[in-house]
Length: 598
Image 1 (cartoon, one colour):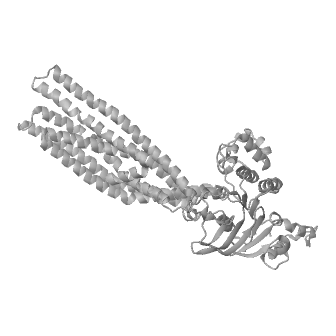
Image 2 (tube, rainbow, N blue to C red):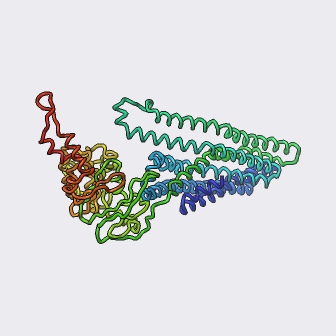
Image 3 (cartoon, one colour):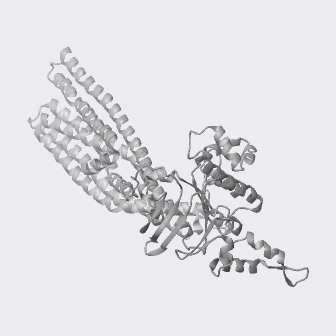
């Protein structure tokens, strides 16, 4: 028990450790105040039995009783406040620490670890530590301290009764140790089952559109049903495993209380104990283990706290990328890759790639899906570290930049936009939370989204659904562009930014992108030819290599993937239904191929 508590206190941080330590000291004072009831009662009973009760004895007894109650009330109240404050502060601090730590982990970590696992740790696990851990620490320490001090008080009255109480306390701790061992064997499985359940629920919610379209409820989702049933079975088995031991704990301390009462009566009858002492022992037998029973019931959760700390520390122990470079401000945005290799596990995704992108130029990455286009751009922004080779920004390896100073040079517009459940204004000023509204509106106007925002009932203060679910795809994209405009970074990465936009929004979206990318260095990943044909350089990526590079005019005359894409696209769109049932070739449609995917 002590090792688990010490582990939790270290995990909680220096300030919260101090709070917990002070609360335990106050717990000792509270337990001492509780134990003072015994001598106070003894003084009165002895005075009554000896017929020597006088005002001095009454005042002394009352003073001891009042002192004990005052100590108990004051120390218990303050100790409870400190433990509660420490518990919830630990939960909040660790959530923030985990969030900050995740920010500097390589993106590969998130490919290998489920969202449900991380969500479970930052919600269920932290909730357990913030709420239940506080109660467990409070009740387990308080119960043991009270019983230990009352036992010490009984030893001072009668060593025989005190020895029985001490033996009962030791037997309780022995059974409690077995209880924690049993809890340890199943707590890891319970926490794993909880994480798996959260993961499956999140997956079900993310795929709710598909679930609706195929009329599949939770009971029809096999993996979700299995996760729910496994979690239910694990909790039931945990209860069945622990209840017998909890019952044994409770039975033991009650039997020890009965034994103390019986022995006290016997000792009084055979004359080896004063009647006053015997009556006090009878009273003590009822209060000796009252707090200990609650401590025993809650102590089963100590192992869950132990496992929860381990899970949180497992995330915090994942090595961060080396983010402690220098705060650099590049004089130019020239980007260069030299013989870069990168793999996801055993699968090589980027293979000995070298390329150069001058500042204030537009570079487009095209090629087959899975060829490594997005990975290359993410390596440039250092979402991952390369396996070999180097990436230079202004002739300096990106690893020599501090992460914050490096990221200040990049803005991103992704194909899938994530907006937060907050006001539109706060979503736009996400990177600059203190930016004035005038700046927010100016960015929105450049991104061509001021009109539709102003038409909303609450304008810029409209709360949008999580993920931006209440907005159309084009509207979400334009808000993300406004957010990027607010950041005003010199390098813009556009990752399929126009892939899923309907034609009605496309013109406004292209105008927004033009406002964003003016006088910037642009890296774009796209399939639509009209979004890349004006690029200063087009890199054709296949199987992690740059297989072609050049302008649109150069590549269209060169045999290779780029020309093949355009040819196949023209063939795909070069036929239409005629006035009859025959198919006729349409030169007009052929000319439209340039605006389609290459």
